[in-house]
Image 1: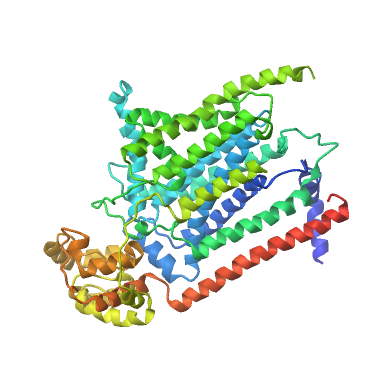
Image 2: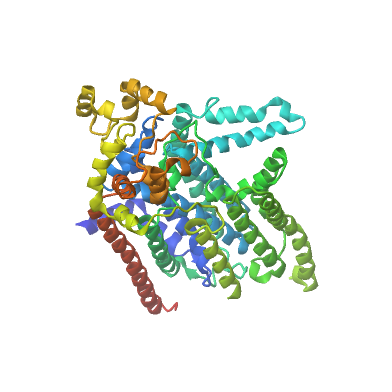
Length: 403
Length: 209
């Protein structure tokens, strides 16, 4: 009976052909390493956010008088198992961003952004950017002290344009700031629009971008860790079952770690200060954004001139976007590129140090360290064209371009 | 291999610092005598703590998530009819609008409405609460909170135990959650191992091992 229904359905939908062409006949290099699994982990993290988020919207009230109670009483105490969904959603957001960061660094390490995959990288960058916006808007919703004051600080960042020499007179920054908040101060209008953005617009944009990213990955195939493009007709292993089961096993490990945090260690993901209802008259002692924004925040904070700080952290984002065009070396993968590997380590250590510096109080020493690591971060991108030129030299010396 | 180890160590250390124990960020520590810490951590003192709270703190403070309101509001007959309509825990806007007079009286005497203490345990932690309730001026100079509990450390500990019981899930719920967590994590680990073994068998059969 079920077999017949299944066959009827399959004859008309041709799903088994799709499976055959996209999963079995789709060949990938045999030597994919563990970091290649971050992509599928990010996909699962996204699904977890969507599912838990849908349930949270059933009880959350986007109203400045009731938002805090609807989160901390209705969801956390009153409705059975909603505490679990909230903890999954809160930890899930952090894990999603952590996995996306690891995925980005994996892409840089294996040079997965090189021709013909530039567009995959660019779409991935926009996924990352929209994801940051989603996380930012979602962080306001519990309407605690950290939500409120974190958003006050964030909406003040554009006003640093106004301290620029000439364009500052136009007050563009203030206009953007008011436009973000929906008024001169953070209130009901801000909460309403961030709620709408967080549950509808941004996730839908994210979904379509992720779909496009996937299509591009399939269209060009996966890079190999040693930087050699495989000949799909002669080599490579079938994606299913070789990779699906391998990454499936890694995924189970990821979920085990994730649920360890959900059940036993929510201290960081539901920070203590956010259990205090938002109070516009009481500024908390230490305001800093969440960890995933701290690297950019430290760049902004360490540079003495406000406008310059704004320019530099936007430059950092821009450099990340145009990374495929900065690196035009014929060699691929950090495994074959010692100079690139050294600069990659500089990049990793600088971004980690910038993030950790963001959690520390803004003393002059920390500002100096922040400045040094900002230079370290930028030096990776600025060194890429030089490394590429040197590597072109090596490549030609070996007679590479005649082949 | 060395590269993989180096990068793995960097990532693990980074997330340990950022997520679990940030050794660089400043944090204040508050001492509690051991016998009083035992009282705070013991749920059975919560009931006694609630009585002490009503006697000593409820003149000004509310614990809305436990439907405990300042005494002047608690004595108001409107409260009961509102609770019949909206449930034991009144919506915040309705609470503030209906009892604006009582709240304003409190505001006049203390400079601000004394905060609701439903989630205070989660915000401040036991150390701060215990020391602050015992000697408010020492911990937060300039506060308008009167030293009601000074010289009564044991009773203070019981009040903190009560605030803890309001903020946290009840003990039977807590142990249920612990079991749920262990089972979930165990399930994923077992599934991971099974998938890995199954993959080995399949790959051997199709000759890709």
